[in-house]
Image (tube, helix red, strand yellow):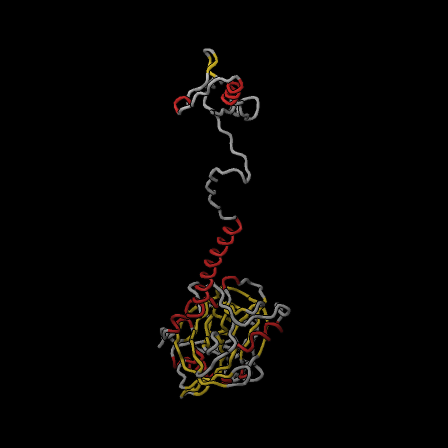
Length: 381
């Protein structure tokens, strides 16, 4: 028996035609007609009625309809389609990869600051002790946060003793100060804001920039100052100065930035520096410097250096040298280095009349750019 199905293009859905062999066989039995044994060759031939085969062959090949689903169907099941990864899984994988990349970049960045204490860019900020959010922008808030990071330096030499200030930049006791504060000293004693004292050694000096780096012996866990970006300083910005004028540890004054890029000249030879130190200790009017073609506080000598400085009207007095000039976010923007302290006409030429609002600070970006050199001994060692 051969079954034919209509194509899906026919008017009706697929439908099985009646079997002719079954009907003719039944009629032959009823009429007593002898049965003819069907062979494979005869079974393959269509039955004919007269000259026409039944059923007539279609004009095109039969279309086999899909077998109905159900437990009685024994046709082979189609191969399962490949399972695609769901979008959330792919998204999570992408996020994980991005996090790994960012995390690695962050770890590399932390390593740069932890290993060297500074980055390659002098304009980048080196984090330290922050000002609390509620106190940010106030003199009291800045003073409370930064005072523990400012120290008093007592330098002793064969010529006498002198007092200056310094800024802690690492928790194990690296301190930035002025070269003229420690130049020629045989011993250095450093006192923290807590009153605790340490002996310090000179790590490196740079007389051309009037900078020096010293290191406390046996110190750890110290609070450090945040080194800001002096390229962002503008005339009129409010500032706070902290230092040890006349040995008064932790003295806080405030003012504004009066000018930028002032050319300040100071002495850099040891002998002349010792003269400056003696004057800072209270026997003179301050440390000598030149500004605008004039000398202030004495003779700067023949060996001297000139640098660009920030000018401030914050009160600076002998002993503030090496201390911090700080913005209202609690970031160091300069290292105080020179101030004008004219003699008091009523007290005689040997006493100081104090600050008249003319002070100068080395920009902190100059300090950061010089740190690697200072750590390797500097140019003056």
